[in-house]
Image 1 (cartoon, rainbow, N blue to C red):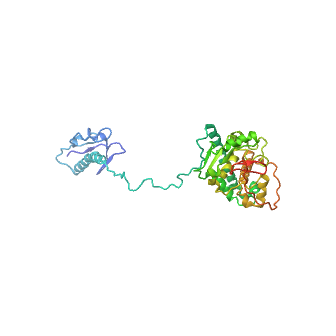
Image 2 (image 1 turned 120 degrees about the vertical axis):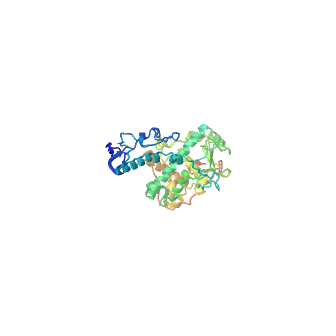
Image 3 (image 1 turned 60 degrees about the vertical axis):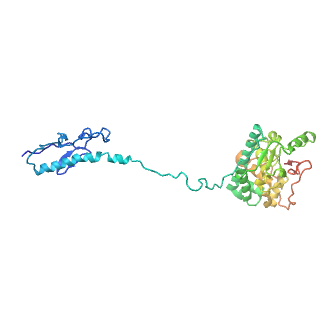
Length: 374
């Protein structure tokens, strides 16, 4: 009887054990069946091969397949070898690849029901920058825009100072007394972030106030107008006259050139001058802010005797903003308040109504010191 001869093969990571033979391992390699699997392991469907036991490499197993008297061990080995031959066919069949390559149909609704842009946007149309009229040339526009940016910076710092210190701020008590600072915070916030659609700064002097007041500078020694609120002619509009470009300073100059909050003109800087002008515009002030104080000392007196009026006084709001900027930003911890007059809390006269000058438009008024606010 022929004897089955086996040879032990080396260990392999993907070897498959044959049933019934613990010590026999057959490497599962792509070169088992030449021509059926390519080097990149993809099936070649254009070739046919007839597989037989003779295609098994001799290094795997040596036995006589034509034995006339097969033993049980022969039969077991032949069955195992047959299974081994069929295994690559099952793994390498192109059926799986063809199924994976089958197209997949995806349906997309390109015309959904209802509008696609129906999402509500509460901030649509909100304009928080001050518009400038095309009548302002390039240099006018550049200076006005820079002044308005500094106005926003000044108002933002005044708001933030109050948010930080509240009524504990000595500067706040100086100008607002013991009133709540919630009102001033709101006014400054409107300057910073309020919707400014409809507001306008222009340079074309439509009411001829710039031209007529400049003429009086030479004839009547008038200080002239650096700008004015248009009042009933256009309540949301402000005109900037040429004198503004000659007189106004940037915030970088605060506390320089001998400036003090108490003794220098309130409109020395672009920021305070334009803050005063936007407080005239109903879109910012709701027509609640007015010039109640006549000068610096009067602003302090109103704060001490009528705090609820002080928080609606345009001058007090400007004085506080520039004083807080000087103390916190320009010269930190020192500022340049100047000689602050001592105010006794006696009953003051009734708050004066803004008065109009004989030569000025109704949107202008004259203070006791002769200074014209327009």
